[in-house]
Length: 210
Image (cartoon, rainbow, N blue to C red; front, side, top):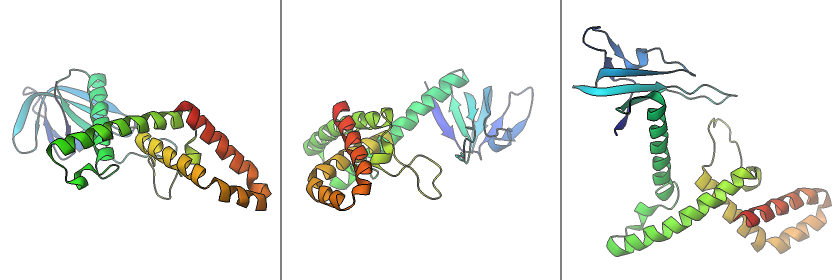
């Protein structure tokens, strides 16, 4: 199985009998459309044969837009198989980001050999827990209690499942750590107490799900 992402500046060369050359961004792929080209040659510098090209551009939805299409060099044979495999690849890249600068910052530890292996084992346990916690946050629709759902000029989701789980743990820890001063504040602003009680119920749901 092979699957590679191509940029839109690549050139797709059709079957020899047709003699038609087009840039990938000239194939007519628009938001909400997809296509699959079999038995073509693709070139950036030198021609590459023996592959198919899967194209997919997600549709715009409620203000959420995708800037460009996917162009995937593959030998899987069908568009659904190519897209499914590429989505798995994207999930792996997201996990790498969570373990590096987007999360645990593994590369910043400078560890090697046995110490690195031990750190990776600990990270695996912590990462698994955060994924489980994040799944509970999404399933029970508790995101608004854990983090801000939207930011100005941001059109994609703010936090991954890993980030949701990590934030939920911190949020519960803060609730427990500052329970007494927050309770005193609630006594001073009783009109806000029902919001605080909603948060406590959300925290209870998270503890039950973890």
